[in-house]
Length: 326
Image (cartoon, rainbow, N blue to C red; front, top):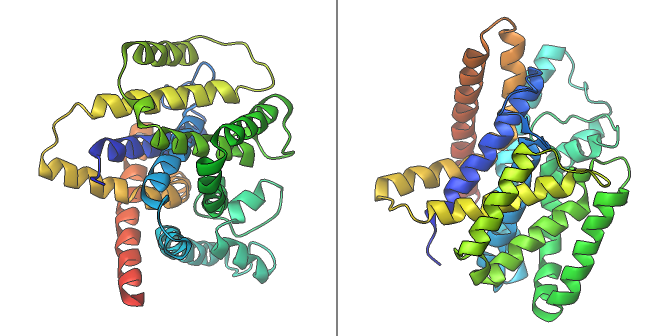
């Protein structure tokens, strides 16, 4: 299936939402438009879009692929970049802290190499987490669930949708996965990924339509600018905004005629978005440490540039490693 450039743009904008949110959070710039809106923060919107986009693209490329090939592709899409970025960050922090065991027992390094260290940290467990966010462990879990999901999509789509949606709203209103924030809940991730699969399965749902566009625009306006009532938590409003933006961005960016150069550039930056995600928080911390009195805009630009440079390096090394192993 031909690659659509609009998906690359959506991915790039989603990672920028997350980068901006974490930068503002570290500098306590919570009044900034880059941090949040009336009903939440842009970080949750970015991760919402990533889950939906992952569900769509994984189902598009893998619904007819054998399990072995599927897991091999998922492994190569995650672990080489994760391991390279972790090793580099771990060495840096070990030198800075003058200890190789700054995260506790050495066996906990396995949690980092499995990609679940940051998610485990949500339960108050000391780990060596230094790259990525909780999203890494959750998307790995969802990738493992996908073979089951695609069977359910084929044989029991309606019943599965009802159950997954029911678990999501139970999480939203009652917090059925204790300790973990609702944004990071497995039930939230399952629901958003499943919606992405549904969008791919029913292609007409994302087609432009006057009523759908109006509803998406009204949803964006209300969630961004109007303080809405809270029942349980604000998770449904955040995810409504993420879904509405996902729909609008795809339809807007699909109207633009892209030349070969623009398409290739967008494809490249979309391709390093995972590496940007892995290292951005680590880089932001370090820049703020080294430049505590710098102007905010200067600190932001330096953090962004260093993050992109690191992501390019990690992406290059990952491809070299994959090619070498092949």
